[in-house]
Length: 153
Length: 161
Image 1: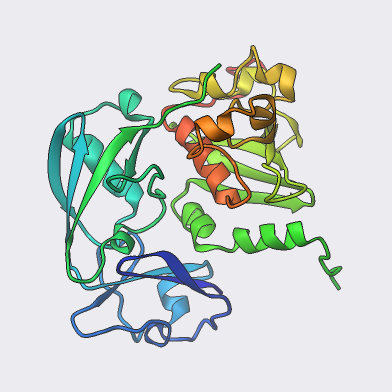
Image 2: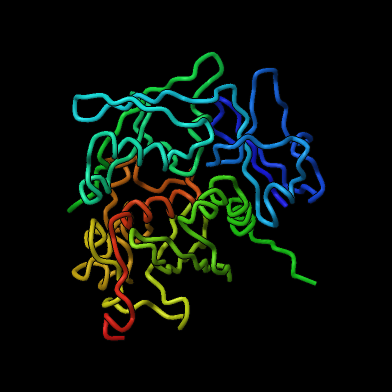
C-alpha cells in the first residue's frame, strides 16, 4: 500500500510507494519533540505503534506531522477579515467551508470561491492539509478568499 | 502476465494517478478512477448534490497535450445525453448546449484540449486556469469539480432517458 506523508510548511507530500500492512506508522515518519501525527482530515492523533493496515485499511494512507495542535486562520474577503481555528490536519476543503460560513455566504454565491496565499495567483489545492502551508515557528496563516475568473467569449 | 507499458505518456499518467494529490481527492470523495484503457481514462467527479458525473478523457500526449474530456455514461459506456448533463450553479457555463455539443461535448474550460485549442488566448489571459505541460490530471479534475460544487445531476428518469 501507499502512504503519503505531509510535513509543516511542505506542500509537496512524500510518498512511501510500497508499505507492508504490518509497518508501524512510526517507521514512516520522523517526529520531532513537540510534534503530533494525524491522519489527514482527522482531529485525533495517530498512535505511532499502530500498523499501516490498522490505521488505513487497504487504501492509501495520508499522514500529517505537525507542531501545532491548532492553526489560527485569518481569511480576507471583500475588504474584511474573519478568524477561526482548525486542526493542522484539516483539508483546505474544510478550511474553505469554514471561511464561507464565517462570512455568511450561501452555497450558490460561494461556489466559485477559492483560497489563495496572499500575493499568489494559484489556489490552494482543496485536498491538501492546511498544516502543509504552516511552517515551523508559527501556528497561524493568512489566506485570501477570492472568486475564480472564468474564461468567457 | 501484463504487457509492459512502453508509452512514456501512459507511465507519467499512471504515476500521477498514484500521487498524494489524486489519492487525497479520492479519499475526500471528490473524484474516482473508473478505468484506464490507454489512451482513454474514465473518471467520475462528484457534484454538489453528491451524485457523480462520469467523464471520459482522451489523454494521448499527456501531459504535453491537455486532456480532452466529455460527459460519459459509465454504465452504458457511451456519451452522456445532453439531457443528463449537470445543471445548476456554474455548470451550464461549462457544459454548454450551444457550444459543447458542436465541439465533441467538451467542457468550455481552459484546462480542456478543445476549449484551449479553440481559444488560444486563454493560455495567457487565464494562466492559473489553463492547462500547461506542468499540470497533472488532478488539476483537470479539480477544475471540473469547482464548476460542479453547486450543480446537480438529473436522474435518468427525470431526464427522460
